[in-house]
Length: 463
Image (cartoon, rainbow, N blue to C red):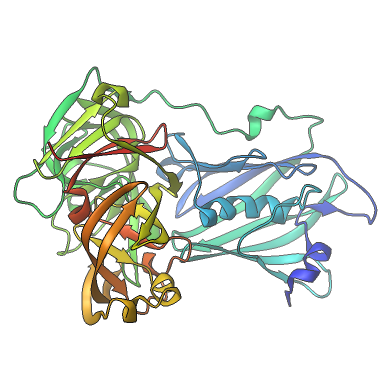
């Protein structure tokens, strides 16, 4: 039985008073046994039933994660504890949906994309919740309903998404009289980077991608892609060469319609020039012949230091603070779309939310919904090319076109090639929360300073 929106109030919240008319305790802590993407561990869920504030935490080695909503900020933290506030509407709502479903607090949370809720007609209890974030569909099954401290709640949770499957079993239920506000806030930044001063690293010459040399756990130099759209990745072959212990099993999506199998590892140390990162999680992925390098460094690196990228002159600088690069260029604010910067832009005058992706060797790929919404195929008299580009999920059909002016914040870039995705039903090209992805054929025209801590990029002309 899938409920329409008008009936959600009767079905939700998931954690509800056992007796009609009762209020029940305000705060709830569920202590969990967890298997997250094949890696066992522990976890907890914290819930403020009065306001909907929420935290979910898994301690499962390299697949550890946290996410929460403190009443204002929807945030996520990775296995290192480094937190980011999500600004993309779908990613923000994917977190707030937990509060919406589990608390249904008086201060209502309006979601841009409604939940699908399945209810057991005999008990009236919620048995499944379906959430939508970008192109991903996340399904959570709720089972083994029990009554504790006047509340009915599920003791078994199983979640399936493009990342794979996690399962949690409630081991104990606590109803503390109070919880500090800090319990729902993003965690403090970890102290896991060493970078004494500004340092320059040469990018591999004559490469289609920004490739840097990286050492993992004092192993041999490896060729890694510097990818603002990615996270720590290492191939299975490179992981074997440096002696990483690989665990678990999950999946990952990207450009293209398919999913790739991944496993997980943790490195004691990662060195890029004078930059040292400690205790870093890695996804272990077969990148395939399309991506002939040993791995990826992305969000984890850029979130810990300031980065100045000059693709035209094949160099990248790292510094403790963005101020070390001066104040030149035009500041463009961004929000996080998961781990990727998302800026407000425009395509020949039509507003467009755009993601920044130095791991994309192309120009600008426009998502299917935006192509159709603005009739871009006819507007640009575009020509269809089968398998025009691809990514970890396979090849993508697209129409070839060109924009007169691409605006990134207030910065105009003229004469920009476009790939208008033809008919994506999955993968990043099917994401309805952004218009498109901007790659290196645009960024090589500019010098870009990334300041992830301030949510700003600075764009300057080439020297």
